[in-house]
Image (tube, rainbow, N blue to C red; front, top):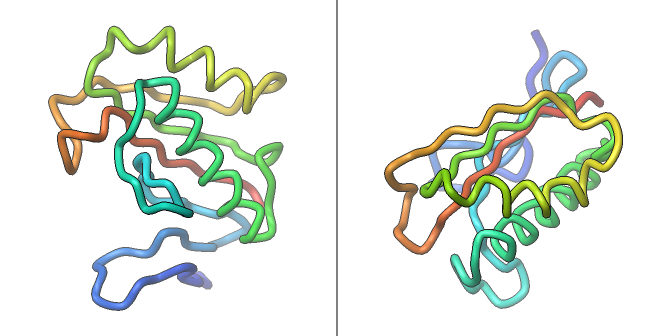
Length: 123
């Protein structure tokens, strides 16, 4: 099995993404603005949109596209945010959405984050 780590940051115990066997596996992402560095700002819609835009950029930089996403996992700190998160999610996957799991969790890596998203895309 060939495996290629992408966007690895020295000192971090994980890769942002890994290419293996024709797939791109992307680690969980939280709401961090890539320009300002601001973390966890906004409501569920704001954070979902920011994360999905960041993931879209990462997937495209890896040689794939959101049309090739086959699986998404979402983690919400408040499951009552499900419908509002879904409104934004549908903007990114309007037709033929990928398989998806949504899980309610008690907390993420910091209290400012209310959603985390990871995905798998075909290359």
